[in-house]
Length: 451
Image: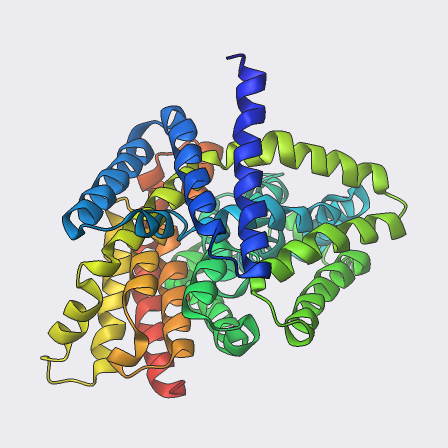
């Protein structure tokens, strides 16, 4: 089969998964479950041969382990299809959410943002903090695409002694976006499986995102203090300032407000609201800016370049979802609470520590955070650990976010490794202390807030 035809078939299967999922959510027809599960199995079969290295072996392992568990349980065909469809929300999100990033890349916004960065962030402290904050803000809308965009601004001129610090800022800035972005796979998995709304957890996860900025700065402060100091040229230009691009700021703000209003006005899953907004809002904004051509170019690039580039993650996530779905009848959901209840401490505390250690610990050794997070979200009832679904959602999102910078399997670490010409472990290791401190902050935050 010619490569162009094969690529078209793969895209068709992926978009068919999204279409059937959306139809199922709107109609609640159980008859669509076998069709959705079949499409997932076809997608995995088509994409699996394209994988390499750890991603290939992990995906195969999840499929084999999941199939083995279902066979041991004597599961019927319907359970196989249900297990296969656990993470189809992620595929749907991957296909639609990146459309929000098209207006962000309008030339006038990009140039104004570069000017704002170069003229306002002079000291090394402000460069470090500004890089992390800007990556978090941009990451909310264009996912890990924010990393190369901000990277080009940061490394446009030499920053002596700042390479590792700025790499940390980029990495942790993206992690901060994971806490609260409605467009990320993390949010889709957690909110859909726990049946909580984004607005119900937003105040807590946004607070954690802000805390992550402070924790990151505190962790790197000793090294940052050694590097602090403006160059003579920077000192001479301190009076020159540039405003943050108003148009871009308005787009980012209105996009978030639109999702907030839609979730309150229309009672449907967050993923469907994002799909609806992603189709309409960026196009309307580009039309208002008389930049429709840029929108269609961005849409074409998304379909022909971005979606194929995400196939590795899509395959891994689908396989991980199948494995987590197969655990449902294995007794995992009752075994863990029973074990933790034997510890003479509050169940909420022991379970919080268990969750953070499991997700962060497996991330360090090379597992993507989505794997343990999906298993926990689908397998354990929060009420069995005397916590609310909102508490559980914040715990899972927080654990996922702090684990992302330390996992050699995440897209951001691999992207930064390529940009900096380092190994993925060289990029991940400087974030261990940050992850440890953020884990403590997360648990204390949940204990104090008492959701």
